[in-house]
Length: 254
Ligand SMILES: [Cu+2]
Image (cartoon, rainbow, N blue to C red; front, top):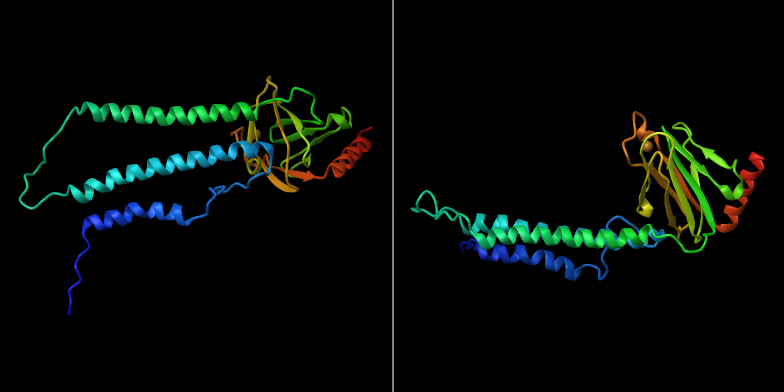
């Protein structure tokens, strides 16, 4: 019977190194949304490439780190009859400079792209937008106000009855973000939107919802005992449905 030759470590390494390349080459031509759908909101369109880029950067760094761990474990094992300790090298200046500069470059690149995307996300339209909605965080729910339907058009949720934020499809809305007690975080995960509700500070955010549907919303800043109950829904409706929703609010609050 033929004895199978044990695989050479170099062959195992080659297989190990080619696996990610094979995965990329045989995979889809587009980078996946990595859990996020494209084109759900105007902010989502801006954030998605940042999200994908950060994952690719993390993958490359992770792979290099793994190689640096696995390589010595295979090729620099203790050899039979070798001295107890191999040659000890200290203060390798080029290596030390490299592992100081490389992380600095990684952080600088991530910082640059984050700053560019962030300034696009918080950009305000020079003209007035079609709609305004107020979002106030309260312990422990949300209050949505629709000034277009009058000053009394305010929907206040409770933990038992979480509120729904109505948003018109395809129309830009300016959100005014406030808090009446502590710091909260207005977060719509599917839209890749998060902005803090700060007491005493008024934040603004503008975006367009691009797909009909209902999406979950959360508070993502630990704001107290019932923080986890600060849930809400975002309902994206057609502009005419939005108009009639505003009419209903107006009629209910005159
Ligand atoms: Cu909160």
